[in-house]
Image 1: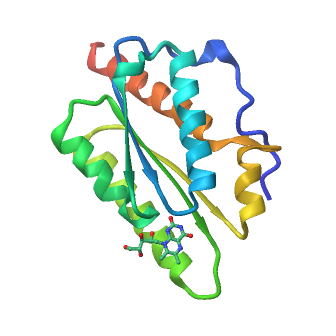
Image 2: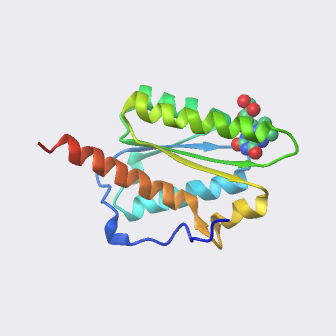
Image 3: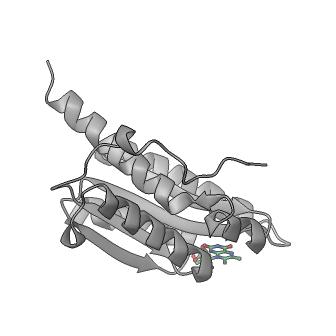
Length: 164
Ligand code: DLZ
């Protein structure tokens, strides 16, 4: 069980996001959770210098659709990174496993296919309480963590592009 507060970090260790563009794909399934993840991600990007106009948020029906939503961003826009936000809660059937596998594999493939940071901000929990704890509750907000990861990966990519 994770005990780390997902929102605790060293502010100065996060690269500034001025003039960078971000696409955020949010799953409507479990929206009480995913809406909070989105608010956390947006707030964190803005705190680190990203302009409002440089953040584009789009919604998809469920976490399974996050990958295709991400592919649309990668294909039709010039964002520097994409953040996928979802919440899959364990039910009585194996649906949970299939959705988690689909979105995990899909996100990995997108990173490599487009050579673009595609951040996996999907909570996979046993119940809603665990999810809310990680979406602005007592364990922080995985949306903030996803935004920080996006900023760091874009900075790494730009650093390597401009060196040697
Ligand atoms: C069908 C389904 C179920 C049972 N559970 C979740 C969930 O916990 N979290 C989530 O994001 N989506 C769920 N979905 C919807 C699927 O992600 C997907 O939208 C549908 O299977 C249609 O492709």
